[in-house]
Length: 149
Image (cartoon, rainbow, N blue to C red; front, side, top):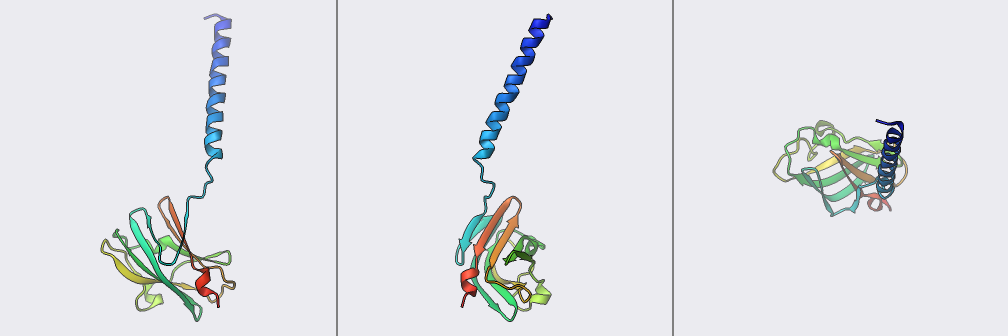
């Protein structure tokens, strides 16, 4: 091949890369990156194969007890998918043995009603958000208004 032909091919390839990069930048600019749903008590959401409804949330004596109805998946470690956001910190749920009677343990295909229990004694402020992270899905329930006097 001649030098002129090689130069023209190089310029064409460079332009093709530049156009593809510009298209990708436009696609990314339209993506806000936060796909989490913001829900409140009584709302139902699906995260992957898990269906969750937050029925109630009560905070007393340094414990936040969130009553949920969930089902749709057999997962012995499904409790690890939940966190409580309190004043900028993340609190993991207590295990079934620590949380006491009615606490969630293993998730099953059959729908069940149980409590997610979080230790909040060391967390000041009124912010309370239940966060479910399962696979690529993120779901948030705003519980703050339930803790206000």
